[in-house]
Structure formats: C-alpha cells, structure tokens
Length: 523
Image 1 (cartoon, rainbow, N blue to C red):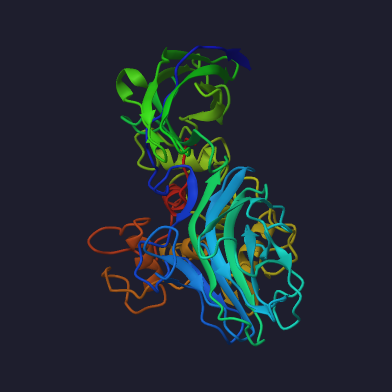
Image 2 (cartoon, rainbow, N blue to C red; image 1 turned 90 degrees about the vertical axis):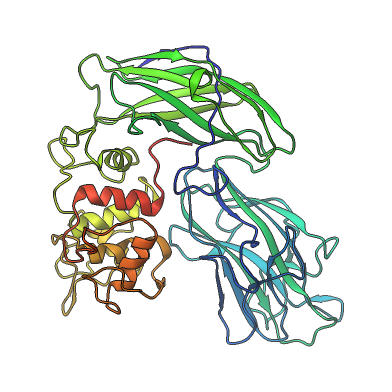
C-alpha cells in the first residue's frame, strides 16, 4: 500500500439517499407530530403484555414539540405497556440515542415507588434487555431508582419512577447505545401495579427521539452521506475522474462556517490517485442543517488509475479528510468494475457493486457475479441476514432442523437462523424441509424481504388487486402489493407481476439494496 498526502478543502453536499431519514446521518428520528392523535407513526408498535391497561398512543396534552407526544397512562392495574420503535440499522460502535420525556408515576403513601418505566433494546433480533445490561450507558438523565413492588412486572429493576424533575416540563435523556452494530429496536416499557394511587397519576410522555450513528447527537459537524459520480452512474470506475460530494450535518446550536482538507489517500500498490480539484467550501451551515458544496469549483474531483491491471477484486480507496474544526473523517471509496460479467451499462450494475462492497454477496465462482443465474433459497438466507445485520454477522451454529439441510452444510446456520426468526417455515412440513437448491420465486421474495425487514409478526396492508396475474385476495397478494407500493419491486410488464418467475441474482441485488437502504458510499 502507498500513501500520498494532498492538501485540500473539504465540504459536503446535502444528499440524502432514498432510504435515508429527513436528517442525513440520523438513523432514527421521530417527534410524533405527523400523525393525528391518538395514532402512532408508521411502524411504531404499542403492545400490552398483560390484559389490562391502555396501550401507548399519541396525545396533545403534553409535548416537547407541538402538537403531539407519545403517551401511556398510569393505570391502577398490573400492566406491562410497551412502545417499540421501528427497526433501524446502526453501522458503527458509537451510536447515541437522545429523547425528551416527562413522567408522573404512582408513589404509594408518598413513600414507595409503585410504578415506573425502563428503556430496553433488541439488537439483531435478540431478546430485549435493559439498555444498561446490554452494554449501553446513560450520559444524561439516567436518574433511575430500584423499584420494590412485587405486584409490578418491573419489580427489582432500575426504573424511571416518581415525578420527573420540573414536571410537566420535558427533560432530556442521552444514552450511548451498546457498541454492537446491527439492526436495533428500542422499547420504552412501563410497569404498573394494582395498588391504590396516592395521587392522580399522569403516566409517561416521550418526544423528540433521535439516534445518531457514529457520533454524539450534539456534536458538530457530523458525517452523514457522500455521493460519488452523481452526474454519471453513481459508481467510480478505474481511470474515471469523478466528483466526490460528502454531506455533513451541523448538530450544534449555532451556524457553522466549514471547510476542510483531504490529508491522506491510501490505495493498493500498482494504482495511483490524482486529486484534480481539492478545494471545497460549505459556506455557513445553519444549526441542524446539512452542509452542501457546489459541484462546480467547490467539491472534490479525483481520478483512480489501475495501471492496466485491477489490483484486487474489492478495490477501495481510503480517503482521510480534515475539517476546519480539526475533526478527521476517513472513508472507503469503492472503485467499481468488480465483475467481468456485469458491465457498467447493466441496469443492475450499481446495485451489484453495492452488495459486493458491503459484503452481502461475494459473487459466484471464477470471480464473476452471475447476474442472470437464479437466486437460490440457501443463498437467500445469507443475503437477507447480512443485508439486515451487516457483513460481520454470524448466525448461531446449526442444530439440524431441516431434513434436507445437513448440519455440515455451510448454509445450514443461515437457513436455521432464518427459520428461528420466523421468516421462513420451509417448503414442506412432513418432513420439515427447506428446499435449499430451489430458486426463489418472485412471490416468495416479497415475503422473505418484508418479514426480514419488519419482523416475523408483520402483517402487510390488504391488497387492492393492482396486478392482473396476482389474485386478490390471495396468499401472496398482500405481500406483493406492499413491496410494489414501497417501490422496491415493480411488475414484469403489461400490468403483471410474474409471481412464479424465479428471481435472478441481479434482481436480488436491487431488492436487497432498496429494502434495507444499502448505500455504496457514505457516510
């Protein structure tokens, strides 16, 4: 490897990928204000683990940002009332949660803590744990006490209890999430008892939820995304000169004048990188906004040269940027053209490069990708779990669940993990079989993708009959139409979906990228 130092000014352009949230770099943000009370936002799930107690909902009684906050009362019953966030993907070991809350829980005789609330987390589909037991730490607002009430499901736990400071004003809570990248679901859980209240209880309000991936939510500035070759096919090829346009978010309270420099470029031996235009300038970035550089004159332009021979199949350029604030950000900028059988003009090209760069798929034997080959059910298990949980994810060891998948099969742990998560029931029940070498049909693909993304208990909306060859109602119609409405998979032409056609590996790269919000460059 060789290293070359070039002085450049770095600035970034406010691009949010199609799957990104309103604020780039913030992987979860919710203020509960885009719905009409008492509805919860999409994919926020309220459940009760007991038969009693009204579940979480939105109301307008109290809020940090108007007009709504999520709220649960403090009923005089034994209750276990849960509010689960949508699943979101954390890519780094430095993610931080910030939210506002206010609460007024029952205190028996003005002395004993009867009711309270906890924050829990599930990572990569594992059971929920207390955020601290899972490896998280409270930075601010962790004023918890031990609950001593054997009528309460949270008895013995450290809980938010009593009345919050300055009630009914909202207090801020800041929590460093456990340093485990993967798919995360957060749970706000209230436990109540059946004791007579000392005073009229108010319950618990939650608002202004935000998770920042890779940085503290109140730090400035923060890397959010980067777009490469925006005017072309979105992939940097050998010998090509491209614009590199990163995105930073100013999470501070004041406007920020921002510049920076590329201070290091590390690349494989036998290759070279030329910085054609190193100067960039954000101007003044308002508080809470994304900083943008203009492509002409104000953003980076760089060229990669392979010297006539690609050095490695997975070729990345490590580019370090030093901002005017003194912060240094290093990015792996992928160089495409990885597979001889996937030309740059191939409609699946950018998607194939994405799943390859992120370690979802390594291609097929011989250094190719085989985009026209069918995606097999055994391969699908790996594709799904790596897309959701990351390339480093390793499933539990196989136990021999399926009659046609021996424990020694390298796909067995992935297949059995998919089964344990409730995403698949196999292809037959007597005996229990998986049919690992069968192609995944388009109708099956819809269920696989949505159950992996949303969870085994997800129920799609009722179908409307939008495809001529998909009977509505029907076994797969709801799933197919949900996938289509999310713009993940279109039909096959002439108003049809072709539900029984096999999915190719090229098509699957598209479906995985769109379903799980995979990005080739960034943040």
